[in-house]
Figure 1: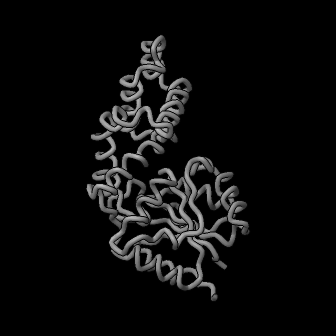
Figure 2: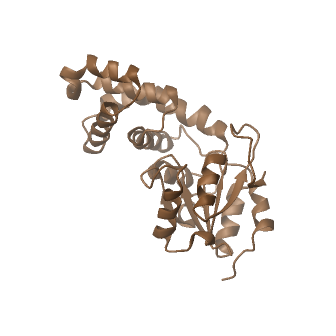
Figure 3: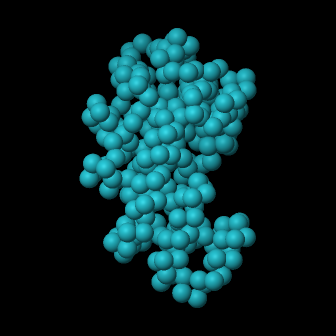
Length: 249
């Protein structure tokens, strides 16, 4: 019986268009100015140091060539690391340092009112219903935990962070590896089969399934992955209650 719902965000509870057309452009447009203003702040400086380390280990030959060109003054070159981070944004690379930095950028956007969270029409209602019914809700997204909490903390229904018992990002592990889902199960202190994972990615669903989780594939218009394989498909979060029995309090 499902006791935990582990939810992806993009393409599952939130339209990909919001991430692609609002969040990513905001981060890209404000990156350079933000780093000029806050690059010396301890939290941001630590993220930039992590970005330098990622750059040093980047397997892309182009990025290694770029790195050699700035090797002499790299730790003092804010322009160089800004350019590298901008390249990661443009290529939609999965960088932990970039995700952390984007969280700070989006925080700025949410706080000033430039960004308003957008979800599928039924998302907020379903989250509230599941929580009231006794399901434990958790998030697993490639976006940083800070970014996840910003999104659910700024909804049209107010701050929904209290509905969730767990937040997981790429620090837990790669979303396409079964070990990540076993780690989440361990952290939630439950058996894998008591967790239902919902995602718009077949590779993520495959990994979760191989770790023993129950899986639902979110098939929405505009999602890049339209091939669910053998996974059970939902086209709306409203369908979740018809597939799995809701636990009683």
